[in-house]
Length: 227
Image 1 (cartoon, rainbow, N blue to C red):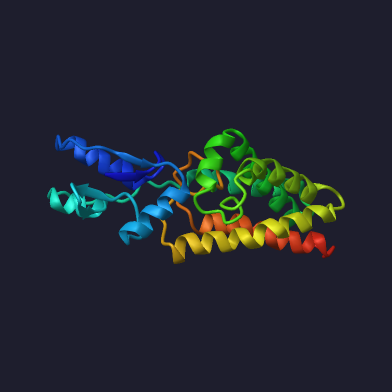
Image 2: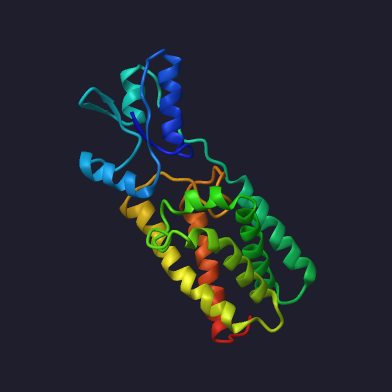
């Protein structure tokens, strides 16, 4: 059995299913995105994990469940952290009463950065699976939370710091491209690193929204547009 690292919900479910049925197995971990990509290319598959009986490929978690007469479960996803972040930052912005949109976006960026800074290593591990910049420059995943925090503070400053807008643009546009490629081209079933590396939030609209905030606010700040 070949699985990506411990954060893959499908790998965990496949392991649990094998254990429940008392089936002995060997788990060959794919510890980085390069290994995952190489494995997919070698075996002509779009997803992991993949199970093998000797040289014969049996398929992924859904195929394993079907073979064992079980109903395949959905991934254990949760949007609670996202609702907590954006709900709290929206209330904070409303209480301040002026520059509401600017404050909401600035607070949101800072809050998301704070969650990443709580466990940078875990964030970097998740982020590197889909972020196009990190896949070329591995150090970027560890720098990103701090840079994002500085951007958020730049958005909140009165007046907003123009440099924060330009950096946000440089991050936001390729970030949106990274999410679109991972979800719609590569069809990866990954957790979103936007609210920290250990979240159960699925990669998709939430992470795209984070990058969209950076891009929209970046344009407004960089070009000194009124909010």
